[in-house]
Amino acid sequence: MKTPPQPAPAVPATQHAIQIVGPGQLVHNRAKPVPAPGPTQLLVRVEAVGICFSDTKLLKAFSTHLRKADVSGGIDAAVLSEIPSYVPGELPTVPGHEVAGRIVAIGAAVERHAVGERVLVQTDYRHLLTPGSNAAFGYNFEGGLQEYVLLDERMIVEPGTGERFLISVDEAPSGSAIALLEPWACVEASYACRERGGLAPDSRLLVVADRGHRIEGLAPLLAAATPAAITVVVADAAQRKAIDEAAGPAEPAIAVAADVATLPAQAFDDIVYFGADADRVEQLQALLATGGVIDIVLGGHRIGRAVAVDVGRIHYDLTRWVGTSGASAADGYSIAPVDGELRAGDRVAVIGAAGPMGFMHVVRTASSPIRGLTLTAVDIDEARLAHLARVAGPLAASNGIPAAFLDSRTTRLEPGFSYVAVMVPAPPLVVQAVDLAGDGGRVNIFAGFAAGTRAAIDLDAVLAKGIYLFGTSGSRIPDMQAVLHKLESGELDTNISVDAITGMEGVTDALAAVEGRTSGGKIVVYPALHELGMVRLSDLAGRFPTVAAGLRGGRWTRAAEEALLAAAADDGAA
Image 1 (spheres, rainbow, N blue to C red):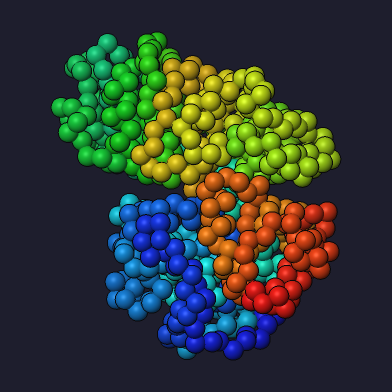
Image 2: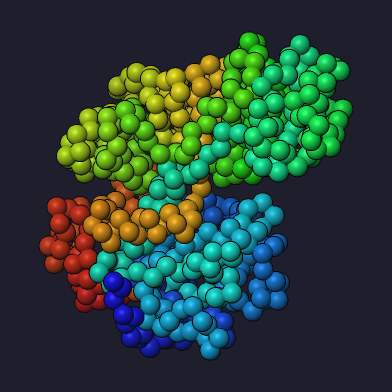
């Protein structure tokens, strides 16, 4: 049962805020005005914010980031003009999307939110489109690296479901534990993602066949899900006839294109390619729509060289690669799993395991009730790897999961893993993951590669071994609710991943630590602490001994958080 909302404190006229004002330009604004909510708006006082690697990407890209663009659909332009925290394009923005806060003021027309509610912020506004992505809190809408943030109720209720993007939470957890639900929810989403082993219903289907390749296995795919439209690029009349026969009398109209080059980018939900030409495969991937699947049917041939696969789109656009070295298109789709969850008996490898997100994947696996798992955590930072082993090793042992923590510079990894997760956005590591995956293996490209980033992947090996490449970005409200339940039930302590804490003055150092991968976990910012610099938990005893006394087994806690807020104020860091 939720604790009743708490009274709201008085709201000041100005606040401290971290703003990105241009590419690579970060400022600590000590007098940013606190906006008064309009009729449909609400003001949230920020308790704690987690630093994310994505914040460093926004800092670098600024106005060219896909989620910093103008909103192009899903909400009236007149509504956007009434929201002062809507800051697309070149307007300065406040980053920070891993947020815990409390509603302190609401407008007269607000219906779904109440003053005093403690909330977790869902940041991904998938219903508000930008030309290349969607809107997001902490990007084209100001985020949480400020003391107060304004939101509008007209855009933070999910269309269709009616679910709130501000999720009510209890008073018991620390602010840090609530803020870190967002990255943990992103991890959860990568396992909960639903995959598809066939054509999308009412899809836009493209069938391409090279000379000398037969059309096989298309009929069962079309029987299971009828496309809205079919476009074909074929080499001879026999291929066209085979497609007509597979579609049957109820076929949608079939359009014939002379060449792949004439087709529009990102126009097809499914592409079935009967062929083995590497140049054509690279060309075809640009035609996949968001969520699209490409099925490569080699028909006994070989591609013969590595293919430049856009791994950024696998992560951000949820594009998928399936296929077969055989002749049947249906066999290609059959390698897709139902979801991204681990399976009984999985041999799991996490590459880049000792970073903040890898840490979470390792802890989730080490805590899993799934039977027969083995875990290999791989990194090249011995200090961070040792810290990970101290935390995750006992968890794995208590669950009967054999675990190894390996430095890949000194230890050769043997292939044959059935699940490989890639945490670092380096294309060679995706290539390594494919090499490590065994027959029927899955490769989770979790690292946030920018769209357009390509990895030279041996698709002949991928298709011969039936390896499934997938990735996810962000989370949805159900993912956050699932992790919130784990936190409130005691099944998960999100504070397990805290490595350092800071006030506003230490945000620059925190971002540098995240970008430089020197942090062994998450860094939590307390906006109420204006002048406090970054302090690692391992250094707390020297700086704030009363705060260090609140740690439990070296882990951040609510008691430590409360002691920090008091001690930092006494120390003049607030």
